[in-house]
Length: 156
Image 1 (cartoon, rainbow, N blue to C red):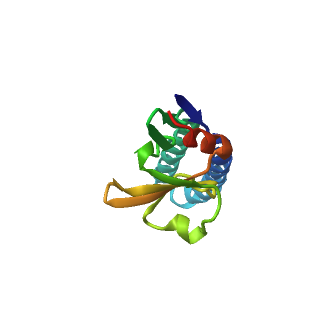
Image 2: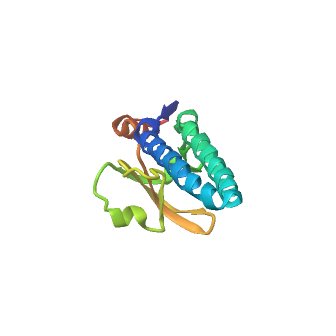
Image 3: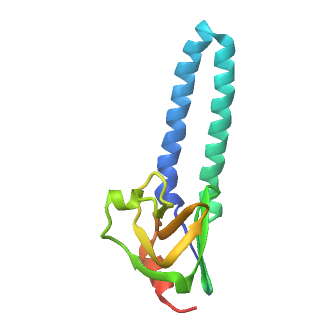
């Protein structure tokens, strides 16, 4: 059984607002800099445009790379920014509530909700090594957390 779960409707609007704020900042600050230091303004504008292009590409990847339950594995993604694959047997539990802001920010929690507050919390049976971190839980903001919970609880 293969099931996909989107998260772009929950996360992308806030990210697009960040792009809008970057645009306003770029127009105002860079115009002022161009008045006094044109070369500095040019370099800063190029860096800002590159950053904005990178962010837009990341936002667009949210729709193309959904969370995936594929047989015995769970692929949790935040677009092209972050991704982790967990075997379903390593999932200890799923919570829809009962966590705090401090819990989400803990080093041992992988927060794939990015700038949104998560609505799904996946506890792992044993820590998962991601780089130098040992992850014991994954938090995410899904568009339909109830459907995700139902699919995760059903056997492959």
